[in-house]
Length: 271
Image (cartoon, rainbow, N blue to C red):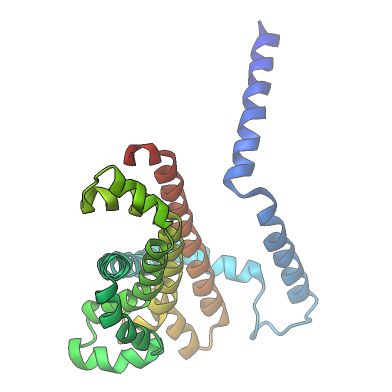
């Protein structure tokens, strides 16, 4: 009986380990771990000054302190909420403009030159204007993030719709599909890969723009911790904030990729 139980446990272990390996991207963690080891050794061997680049163990201690006193949750959650709010706002507006520009050539000729001109404006150039218009509250921060998200999502939607083979559209018209059915059954599913690329790019830019957004008088957020680390000459705070940006940004990107896979698996529902 014990032998049977042990065999069952071994079978479970064989299934669990590959799943864990796939969940953590396997070999993708080898280079970061190697860099951490080299970084730690360089700090202990005093190849770099601690006031310039603290050891990973020191940064880990800072993150642990933030976890205990609630700093990590307070500032991390606030930044994440700002990014998500700006991401959803920017994506919704981008899909509206992208679909209109992708489906109607006249609308594209009228509005696309203006949008491309606005796209060339640097993110920090919007900061004083948004502060003047909306103050230093949450509205200006979310709108700034939404501006950063808008352009890559808009471009991907327009590009995805314009690259749908014309033969597919002709087949839809041959089956006498209405414009709405044509969009729902042919254009939208065919442009999904491009749209998801734009969403991932927009989410990444949202995390970049949130730093500029939190420079606008924020009293909470990871950008605020960056400024505090600079003002107090605390490189461990600065690098710990950067690490949190990277980790939370990676988690949100992983969630978006998981949604993308689920949508692809359920693609038959579009037909």
